[in-house]
Image (tube, rainbow, N blue to C red; front, side, top):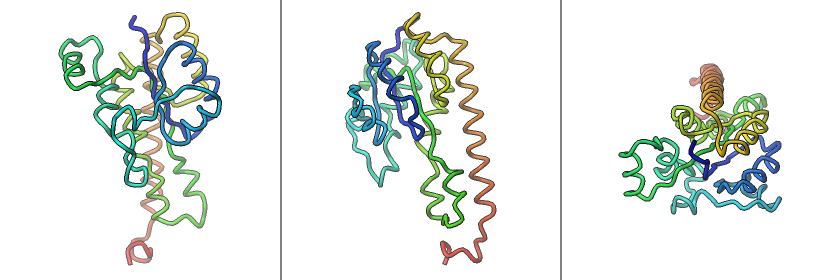
Length: 204
């Protein structure tokens, strides 16, 4: 079993992150992160590298573009035992990302506010998060993807015992991802379908 080397953590729900990330760091796993998640980990003395430093490309467009980069998605989607993938990774300077812990902008909570505008709702549609989650879940043979803090203990236990998680665990976690992203998209669609384009000032 190949040892996990690198984790990308970007969370809206940061509960338990200091313990989880702290244990990853103690296991020698490099942590990549963004924004408030990176700030919280640094407040707890956990070493973390900004994704912008990892990719060599700054966050831009008011934070709309942070993780949408080949160094992120190449690191996630590469099949780590595929010689051609490994060759291309070496050629393009890609490094493997073995663990992805992400949860999404709270769209449902945002639109629950009666004062929420269409513009505000749109800004709270997560793009980078679902993209990373789907990439990680698709490549579950090589990537551990976590959307629920309740799964931190099992992931840590397996990392400590084996240096990585088991394939069965990675598969179960991947299924959780597709369940989450399906529900997330359904929630967005249901809310947007209620928008009256004839009377909404967004379309004026």
